[in-house]
Every structure is written in C-alpha cells, then in structure tokens.
Amino acid sequence: MKRIIPAAIVAVVILVAFGYWWSSDTQALKRRTQSLLSTLTLESGSGKVTRQMGVYSLEKLLEQQVELITPTVDQANGTFDRGEMKSAYSWLCNQSNQTRFTLKEIESVSVTGETAQVTFTLNGLVELPSYRPVDGNFSVTFDWRKSEAGWQLTRAKWDKIP
Image 1: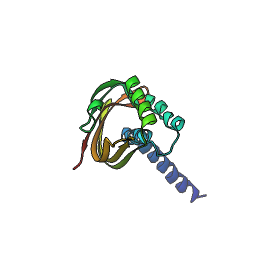
Image 2 (image 1 turned 90 degrees about the horizontal axis):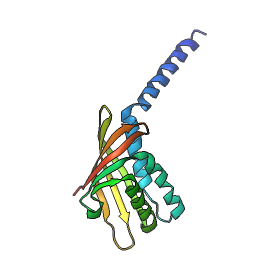
Image 3 (image 1 turned 180 degrees about the vertical axis):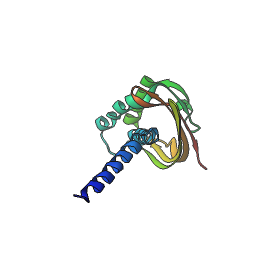
Image 4 (image 1 turned 30 degrees about the vertical axis):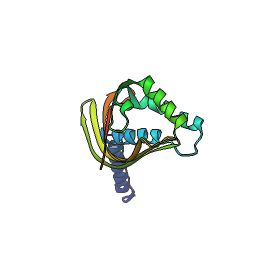
C-alpha cells in the first residue's frame, strides 16, 4: 500500500503536466499548422470525392478573410474570403495530379494574446497536368487568430529557399 500511493501521485502529476502541455496554445498551433498542411496534401491517385472532403477541414482552419503572399503563383497573392479559398481548394482537388506539403521544421511559435505566428520550413509540390507551380523548399509564416472555433489562419506568407 505504501508503494501504491507515491506511484499514483506520480502518475497523476504526469497526467496533469501532459494535459497542460497538450492543451497549450503553442501545441494547439503546431497541430493546426500540421492539420492545414495535411489537408492541402492531395495524394497521387486519390479519388476526387476523397480529396473534396478536405473542404470541411478548411472551414474550421481558415478565418473569414485570409491574406496570401507568394512569389511562385501570382494569381494566389491577395486577400481572399473563405468561400474563395474553398473554391480554389476544390479546383486544386479536380485539376492537380498531386500536391504535397511536408513540414520539415517548426522554427518558432509566438503567441500574443489572441494572435499568433508560426514560422517553419516545408517541402512543397503542386503538380498540375502541364507544370509545377510549386516545387521545392520554402520558408513559411502562418499568422493565426484565436476565435470561438479555435485558432484560424489569417495570413500565409512563403518564400522559396534557394
């Protein structure tokens, strides 16, 4: 009995510490970032219906207005409402051979009240039937805002790493 009580106390402390860590804003932002990249990844040979299911994830991950800044696709620069982003995603689902966004390293996560910024590197590929507008390593910054729906993306900026 004397050994069980200290072991139980240690187990409770570990569970509480893990719960605190798991629910922290930093960890939530890392999970949201990975979730968005996973949603944008469309495997070669996957069916259109399977691909289109990702649009439901976008609803939760995107703020009503999202600003995109990219040097690789001129038409993708600007501020777009969530509906436009979902339409662009649907187009990509139908037109791309495959897309891949592989997180390489999270460089920083900074949280200031209800806003946050995640800076990371990734390997990206968007393969369309006739060309690849995205192919290589990128430095990316996601800006997030906390809302009732959780952390939602407000801005994405990426630059090609030479």
